Image 1 (tube, rainbow, N blue to C red):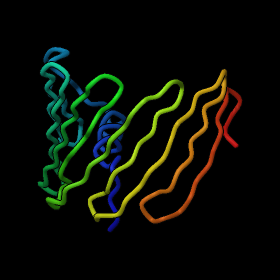
Image 2 (image 1 turned 30 degrees about the vertical axis):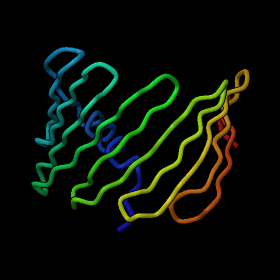
Image 3 (image 1 turned 90 degrees about the vertical axis):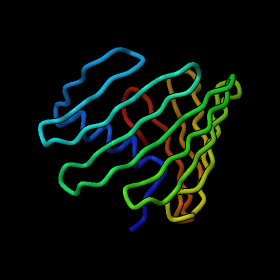
Image 4 (image 1 turned 90 degrees about the horizontal axis):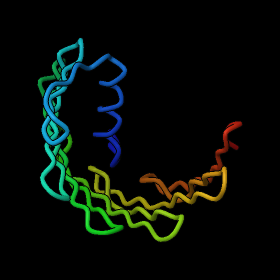
Length: 140
């Protein structure tokens, strides 16, 4: 099964849609959804750490992000214990990202904001190129 760098973020979003209840502060909080899934996030200086738990499978995952200036590095382990990483750097109105998913496949891309449009382009972890521009009226 292919797992991407965004696996942790997707899980957080999915948990959010299950109406997670969060307690704590902006520097340390625990969230649990109605299905029993949970995650804990802590922030220390320019670093953040997230540990998650899937109630259905009993599996855990984690990720940590360190920010220095316009750059950030995120590393983590998926529910199967496989490592993944991503590095992002913002230069002007463009953010460049590259890394390896938990299957060891590389990906890279950029997000460029110009006026009211945002363009996403790059190569996903399956080697497939993508290009999409979005505005307030939709994406094409």
